[in-house]
Length: 113
Image 1 (cartoon, helix red, strand yellow):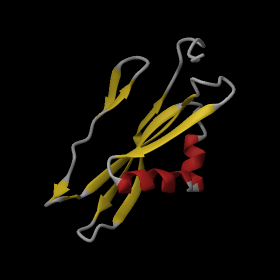
Image 2: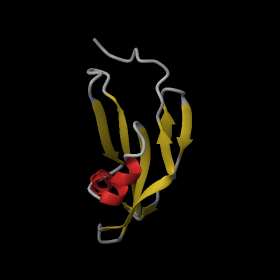
Image 3: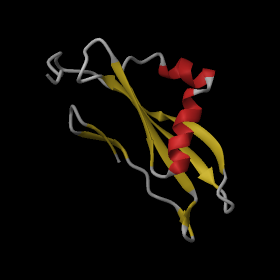
Image 4: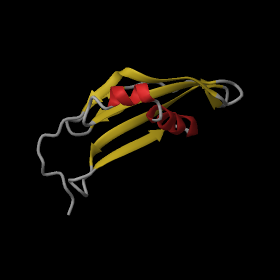
């Protein structure tokens, strides 16, 4: 489940898919936010459910077409997904454009001293 923490609203949720003891899909999240420790910098967070999802996020950021889509938003969160075959290889890596969520800040008083 992806949750907009500023507004406390769920954005989307996807079930885990397993084939035996291995996942058949993996997910990753790419998030760009204001850096709470330095107002002059941004933070880019990439994470996945398993190793495939984390690598998937990095792969998505290395793709020029994906960067064009993501650079249209100042602050955002988006879900990535890939299929995992029975040999443990990732296939059909893609950004889930329908999950792109623009993050807006209500105030500028977010910095941690």
